[in-house]
Amino acid sequence: MPVGGVSVVYVTHRAEPRFDWFADSLAMNIGDADVEVIVVDGLHSSDRTDRISEAVRGRFAACHVPAKPTPYNGPHRLTQRDYFAPASARNTGVVHASRSYVVFADDAAVLMPGWGGRGAPRGPRRVRRRGGLPEALGDGGGTWRAGAGSTGRGRYGQPLAPVQRHGGGASPWQPVVRVQLLLLAVNGLDELGDLVGGEDSQPGTRLEYLGVEVRYSRRMLTVESQELHRQPGALLRVDKVTDRETYMRRLRAFGLHRRAVEGRCDSSHMLVDLRHGTRQVHALGNYYRLRILSPRNIDQTVHHFPRPHWFDGQPLAEM
Image (tube, rainbow, N blue to C red; front, side, top):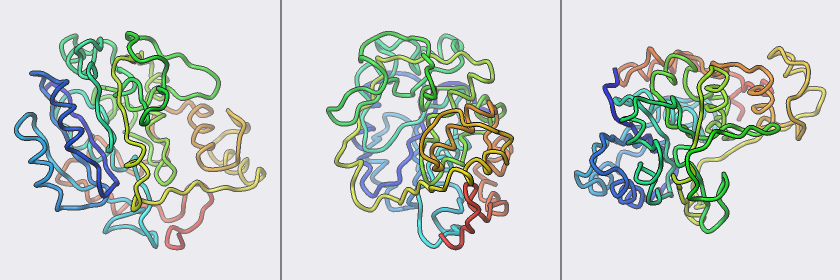
């Protein structure tokens, strides 16, 4: 049972994640806060542990764990090659989290000053001290920037603000949220988003459907390296496409008769249609109950793998 503080789940599917960059930036942000880092390795590499320990240098607690079994990559895969499975990896971190709050962090990125609560209202330190009001602080990094590009949610430096919903847009990605909300209420990140991504844009929406007030701080800025983000060797993403008739037939299988947003008839758009159309709180694509998993029994999920792909029914063994 989480006892307090924040668990930072750092997920990597890259050969060179530059964890040392992240570790230095985190150490500058957290002060004396109760923080642990769980490095979830989507490449199932065991030779990074020493490098991670060297980067941490005793500044915060950290562990290095392989991503849990998934049908899309690793030793238990059903597919012919390794694919990107970010939701499964993030859920691995939730299972290993031992603190009350969890926030997700990406590889090849650094946290800018203010991310950890110094100047970022109700950042991880303030969430712990204020008793968790609001229950979810959106965007883990609040604002996101790729290299020298524009920020993802307005101007950096502005204070905590409510999420502004518009059109088919997503609620904030990677929220700082109570572990118990992820475990008990929404059953983690939705693994329908594996292969294509976008899994990090829907927890905030589902928490809102649950009645949780989601806010975010633009002072919590994450900057990601464009060069490392696109480095060769990253796992393959696949956004499956079909015709409109087949797409609508598949939507009806989920109980929907119209689209929430217009766009291509592909799996990434269907994720958005399902999120806003069903208004379902629980993850639709998770074939297990996250709350009964532990680091000791997490490998048991391999016995419940789906065999066809959820979007078009293609056998995973053919992919």
